[in-house]
Length: 382
Image 1 (tube, one colour):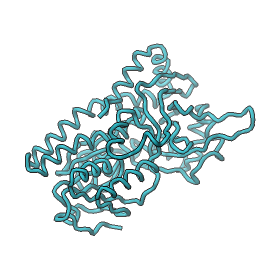
Image 2 (image 1 turned 90 degrees about the vertical axis):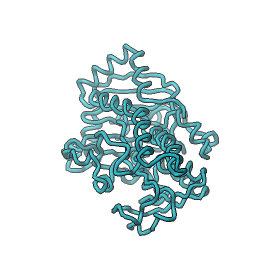
Image 3 (image 1 turned 120 degrees about the horizontal axis):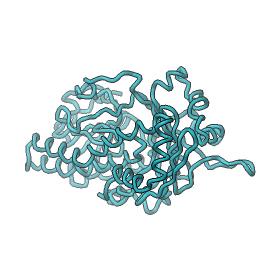
Image 4 (image 1 turned 90 degrees about the horizontal axis):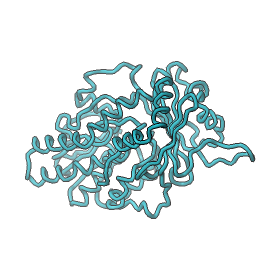
């Protein structure tokens, strides 16, 4: 449905999008006794295309806002394995690593916390227009990787345009633990390991999440799917399965828990601005890191921590709107711009078989270089 709720006089802050960034910001503002409305187009709980690995830098923050991670028996991920199309493999210790939790679980839990703290969370609301009906003192864009609102807000990356062949498609499954005949194995990650398997024009992550399940999520060039006339299973059989690890997994579809995969299209890694048309952008709406860097969820949460005190200063009339926008953009870029640029630079190495084979061989011989890559794509506890 379209939103028809007038929020301009009722709320201090309107947040469009109920993912990790939007929910965590709403919770912080509600804790500070601010009136917040959050508009989410779906109804919780629901699945999202996401690798479902969160680095440990986010653990303390999530517990501070009420997510009882310590009580949830979540898989602790401390190892990384990367495979190339030719079968080359490297393994690396992740320090401090991360943990696995499904977005189905985490988003719904955070939505419940937000409601309990007084956030007016409106589900199944599709915001199509920017008008006085959804304006309040501060507008927050937390609507994820791609939205019709990007065009309505006349965002700079939309003006630049991008051909269909440059777009990406994301696909996610949950997989049950294997129960196979003796002697037969399913190449799922160990509970303490996240795996990254390359194929021509894409890569696939596999790791354990809550509830004794595994998340399999991959990103591929839209042109790959076009080659197979939009048939995802055919693409998985003929393209992804050229990687022997993925071939093993996709040959056991009886273990897949979804009747159909969760998908998203028209993903772009173009540079975005954290402030557009007086909206503060958080999460993927501000900038999407390449999934191979494995840290988009922490970035979304961290962006809310950056935005919260700046918004509070504006609401308390300590700074002007222009100062709020400038301070947020500066601090967001200082925290994330280099990380995003590095991810865009690293991604091509894993998309072409020849490059990925060489890169994996090099990294296998230079663990110090692998340590630097992990450090550049992760941040400190916040």
